[in-house]
Image 1: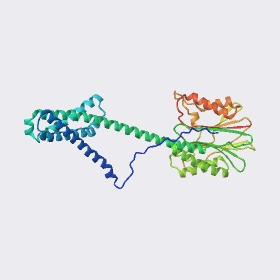
Image 2 (image 1 turned 90 degrees about the horizontal axis):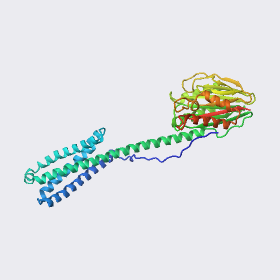
Image 3 (image 1 turned 60 degrees about the horizontal axis):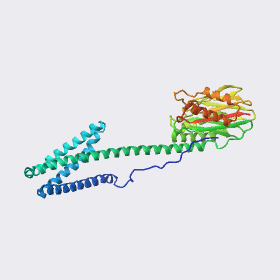
Image 4 (image 1 turned 45 degrees about the horizontal axis):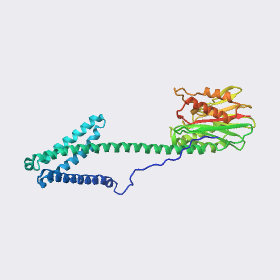
Length: 411
């Protein structure tokens, strides 16, 4: 049996623009459109202010209109340049200091620009100094307010874009994990084979970060049963694909391979030639002959299986290095003759390395104690007992790795 967590796919979003024959021009066009609209808006501000000053002070509209339009453009572009180019350089400063510097920079730029505008019509300014000073003061206040507002908008926009990028990356990761879980679920056994004199049960519970645990049962033409467990390196979709490759090689080679040791050699050759040097797998490969109750096995860099017999335990350690790590190599084949009541446990490091809140690992000895204490119970109940013990040991934190456990008991 296999228990696998599953999550529905979540919608994804794509904000990349569709490519066109003139991608660079199309990307630049929105910027030019904005500047045109920005300029037109401040021309309108200058016009409205000129009319207001003319009616409020009784001065002639023509000179006021000319100066107001020039002042408005100074205000607009001083605010724009400060908000878009200068303010981002001050983001690391404390909020109150940043706000004061923002306002000071804009006001300084606006006053300097206003002085340049005044020199375009010095005679009128000399004749109407109050109107000129009113224009300068209004420009400075208006520019500071607009620049601070535009800078705040830009900061909010950048924060929203950063949050959206994180959301997209998280969505892509969740899709990857879902694919990996689906691959893992499809590769696990869908039914337990009926073998005379042998009970079987297995479980694989993926962690949030999907790993590459695998277990399988196989039969050959001579009636032998193969029981296998493996843990491939890495996590996510790459680990799931490597796991699928390993299982395909396992199923194709098992019927024609005499011993688990030679099977490990064939798997090593296949995995080494089809993956990078960083990709490998640990595995425990065993075959059981129902007629003789003979168990042959090899431990390829994996955690040794635990055999419980009459309240005692022993480890199945004969074997060799992990599969796919180096070219060539040889794996020993160990052998045991099982008797009724013997309980064999195959497991991955998600069981023994499960951490407690203080960092201590669950350990193989605690697992062995549980198996000895519950060896006579139904295998499904034994698995549930181990899973409950792991949950109590680790507490409410999420599992750090896949938890895979396979039990076989001779009747």
